[in-house]
Image 1: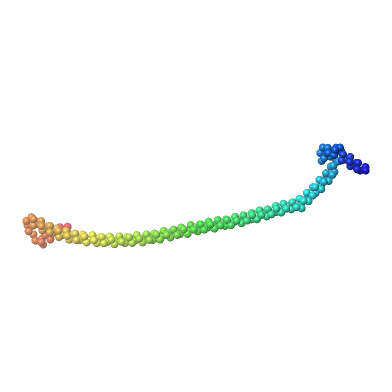
Image 2 (image 1 turned 90 degrees about the horizontal axis):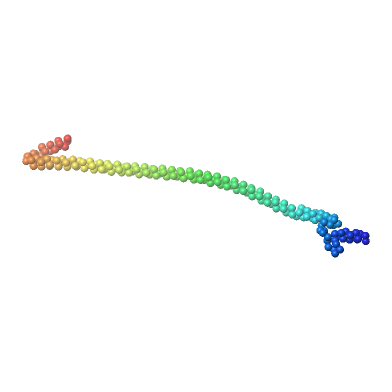
Length: 183
């Protein structure tokens, strides 16, 4: 019974006569050993829960994230390389298209120039032909004008001689008009 009384005295040091705690029970020196025991058990249980359950899950999530990040970075690098290759191919295709367009434009200019030269040559030939025809017509007109002038001059000379009251034969009038026309 001595041990029971000792336990009752220990309890009674932190509890008043009505069974209520005096002050804060955590600070009661009689209960600290018991509190430390349960604190150690609680910390060990928390440690094992964290070590066996929570931390492996966290580690697996972190590893998965790291793997995802690594894969995403590798995929981004691969896409970057593909984009650079596509850009280079685009630039090459654009340069080829410009070169081809310039060649087509030059070919078209050459064809147009050849067509223009042909048209100019044809026009020159037509102009030359019409000029020759015109010169021929002018020569014919001149020849007929000279002949007409000669006829008119002879008729006029005969009319003037007759109007002056003189008479002249046709041979003399023809000779006089011919000498004047020649120069």
